[in-house]
Amino acid sequence: MIVVMKRKASKTDVEEVKGKAVSQGHEHVVIEGVERTVVAVSGHVIEDHRVAMKLLNNVQDVIAVGRPYKLASRSYKDVDTEIKVGSISVGGSTLALIAGPDSAESVDQTMETAAGAKQAGANALRGGAFKPRTSPYSFQGLGEDGLKMLREAADVYGFPLFSEIMDTKHLEMIEKYVDALQIGTRNMQNFKLLEAVGTSSKPVLLKRGLSSTLEELLLAAEYILAKGNENVILCERGIRTFETATRNTFDINAIPYLKANTHLPVIADPSHATGARDLVESVALAAIAAGADGLIIEIHPRPDEALCDGPQALTPEMLKTLFDKVKKIAPVVGRKVG
Image 1 (cartoon, helix red, strand yellow):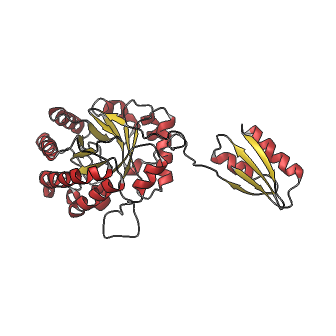
Image 2 (cartoon, rainbow, N blue to C red):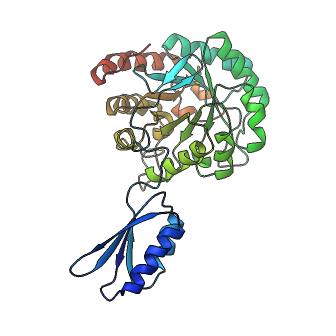
Image 3 (cartoon, rainbow, N blue to C red):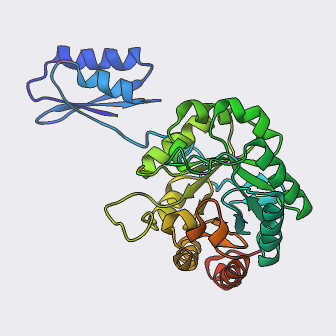
C-alpha cells in the first residue's frame, strides 16, 4: 500500500506511519517529494491494515497496490490451473461440457436425462438434490435420495458428477456421492460454507453471486483456497441488473477478465444466465468464443414437465445441436471437444 501524507505532516507523523508498518509486519520505504511525503509499505497487506493507517495523524490517503485476493491471482500462480474431476480435466485444452437436470425428480427421469446428455456429447453430469428456491413452497429437491439417483446415473454413463451443497452439515454425506461440490449463486458469500468446502478433497465449482462483482467472486474463491483446497472452478452465470427481458444479464466481459487475472478455470452457465432455452445456444457459443473452459447446461427430456426451471432447460436433441456447433468453434480458440 502507498500511504500519502498531508502537506503539513511532520517528521513525527511519518515516523508514526513507519512504526505502524513495522508493527503490522511490513517493510517500508519513505519517499520525500517536493510537496509531500509518501510511504511505500510492502508485505501481506490486508484491509484492516489500510484502515488502521488511514486513522494516523496527517495521513491523507492510503492506496491499495495489487489485488485483495492473493492465492487466486496470477501474481501467485501465472500458469493456468487444470483441475481433475473424475475422468475429465477442467481448465486444459479439452472443454468441459457439463449437462444434466436442474433437479433429480425420479429414477427414470434422472436416468433418461443422463442418457440424453451422453448421446449429445457431454463429458460430465450435473444435477441438483438440494434446491435453494426463492419460495418456500417451490420444489426443494429430493435430498440424499436425489443424490443416489444422480450417482447411479453418473456411474451407468461414465460421468463425473457435479451437485450443489447448501449446508455445512451435509458435507460429509454429499462427498460420498459427488465428484465435485457446487456452491450456488445464493451461497457465494456463505463464508462458513466456503471454509467447509475448503477443507474437502473434492473440487469446488463456485458460481458468481446474484449481484456480485468479480472481485467479490475471487475473494469468495480465496476463502476456499486459504483453507487448503486448490481445486476451485469459477462459473459466470449471469448477474441481476436493471434489465428484465432475461432472467439475468450474462456478463461476457467476466470470462476474459477472469482468465487474465486468475489462474483458476472459468466455465459458463448460459441456462441460468438467460432463463430461456431459445437464448441458451447463442450465449453458450459466445462464452466459448470468449475463452471459457467449459459449459454447464440444464437439460430435461420433457421440459414442460420439469419441477424446476423448465423454461431454460434444453431437450437432449437441442443439446446435441449446440455441442455440434461448439465442436466447430473450439479449434478457432485453441480448444477441442473430447
